Image (cartoon, rainbow, N blue to C red; front, side):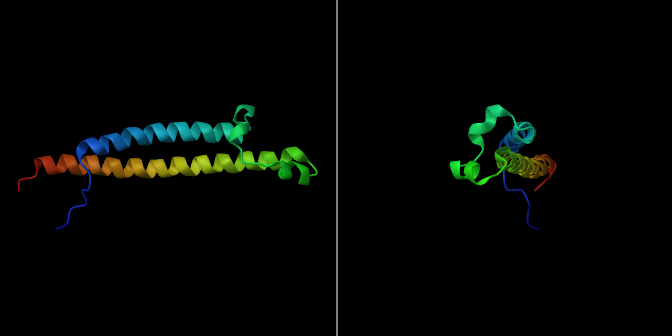
Length: 101
């Protein structure tokens, strides 16, 4: 029977730690981008043409803030998935320690 185990216990534990950190950091960034924090303006991808073409200039920038915030939340969800896979790997490694071959 093939095993679903593809990484060792230390790598799985490292994956869990990195996933927890990634979820916290990216969730906070997503919240701050959706709140339109002025400190993060350098990370919003806009050009001068975006400002010139808009009749109401803040609306395009606010839309870009929201898009970057949504991207942060998507990346946090991917980290949740990586954490779930790492947790499964930890459990499979624990099970393998007690199996007799």
